[in-house]
Each structure stands twice: as structure tokens, then as C-alpha cells.
Image (cartoon, rainbow, N blue to C red; front, side, top):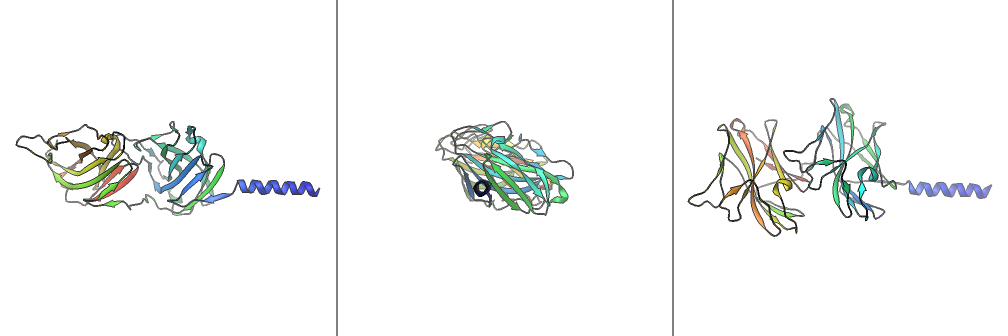
Amino acid sequence: MKKIICIICMTLLLCGCQDKMENIEQGQSYTIQEKMSIEVIKTIATQRIEPSNKNAVSQSIQAKEDYIYIDVLLKTTNLSQEQLKIDEIFSGRYEVNGISYDLNSIMETVYYTGLTSTDTLKENEERYVHIYCEIPKDMINQEIILYLQILNSQSFQYSFIIDEETESKDNIQSIGDVLALKQSQITLNNLAQSKKIEPSNKGIFYSYIPVENENETYVYLQMDINNISNQTINPKEYIYCEYHVNDEIITSQIIIESENHKSLGKTGKIEPSQTRTLYLVMSVNDDWLKQKGHIEVFVEGQTFQVQV
């Protein structure tokens, strides 16, 4: 009988070790069985789940009326030699004020511009994954616990408190700043208003792009993008921005200068080791120009804010 009791105790001890739950801290990387690594990028309460590099055609997931999403964004890297589906990686639940809520997950596309539930995480690939649940709005401002299991093997616990629409605003930039990214270095050259966009190296004869409506003015952010990667960059897939003013969000279009800076176009790519000048342009009603606004730039899964 004593031997049986010892065996049972040992089995329970081993099971307890396997089920040991590790606490997660934001900004710290965790490796699971040398197959996967995760890092919490941000934690927000929001009405919409959106891709990090949203653009004019990006779609979002909208919460029901009187409900809100709790969204934990994970940088997820596949260290294994096999392709994995999201539902094979993550499982678990949220707990708010003692009530359990189902955990949902959705992955961002390669360029962070969309959301997908069908893509697989390929070998050595890094993607952003939203781990979220939908709760009544009156449940926020309370402690929230995420119980997360990865690859059906390792368990994590992440505890936090957030307010509605709370989001990090740490990435505030100024003109002249350089954004050091994985694929490029971006220099913020100028933030201005104009009725037309002109090339920076104007000759005697040159073309420009005027506003379409006489009661509007372009607010534009001019930048140089130096491609430091070995891949061609398509600006329309790579970068995007919005102008927030008067409770409105105005989306941008991209205008690209020629390599000699003498002409403008709406298409073009940036080859490896090449630097091109871009204009992120928004048409703003003239009545709003005297109001304080800000620009949000979305690139490589990050959001940078520039005051206007």
C-alpha cells in the first residue's frame, strides 16, 4: 500500500510540474520547447480589432453594442520546422471579476495590413497574433487574467487592468527624426499644408498634383525611405497613415517622387539599397485646418504619432 501511495504522489508531483503556470510580463520574450517564442507587444480595450499596419482597405472586427474587446497582441515566432495553424498554437480563456470568457485568436497578414484566420505560421516566420475576448463595457477597469496555453504544453498567466480605448502613445515623433526599422530607415523630412504636391527638385517645366476640391487642402508628411533589406518594398503595402482631426479620421494616399526628384507618381517601388522620397497625403476640409490634430503612421507593425 505504501508503494502505491508513493507512486501516486510522484505522479501528482510530475503532473504538477508539467502544469506549472508562468507569469507573463509585457516586453519580455518567452520560448516554448524551442518551437515557439512569444512576446506581448501591447494590451488594449477597444471597439475594433484592427491590423497594426491598417490601410485604406483594411477590415476590422467590430464588437457588439455595449460590449468591448480585450485585445492582447503577441509577437509570435515559429522556431520549429513545421507549419502551424493558429488554433494549434493557442488555447485558454480570459477571466474578469470571476467570470470566464472564451479566448479568440486571429493573425495579421505578412505586411501587418490585414487579419486572417486561415494563414499558417511558417518555419522561422514572425507574425502578430491578436488574443482577444468580448466582454460587457461595464466590466472594464477591473483586473483581467489571461490563462494561455501554448502548443498544448506550457501554460501562462497574464494579469492586467486597462481602461476603454487605452493604448500606448510612446512612439511620438518629430520632424527630423529617423525611424530605425528592420527593413528600412525612414527620415521624417517635412509636415506641411498645401493646395498642391510638387516635386522637391522643380525645373522650369514640372508637373504637380492639385487638390480635387477647392475647399480642401493637402496635409502631407514628406519622408525619405532607405531600403536596407534585400527585398523590394512596395510602399502601398509597407506604409500608411491617417490624420485625426475634429473627431474624424482621414486616410492617406501615397505619392512617390522619381529618383531624380523631378516628377511625381502614384506607383513605384523601392529596391534594396535605394532611397526614395514619399509623400503621405491627406485631403482636409479647410475649416478644420486651424484645429489641432495628429498623424498616425503605420509601418512594420508599429504606430508612430506626429503632432500637426
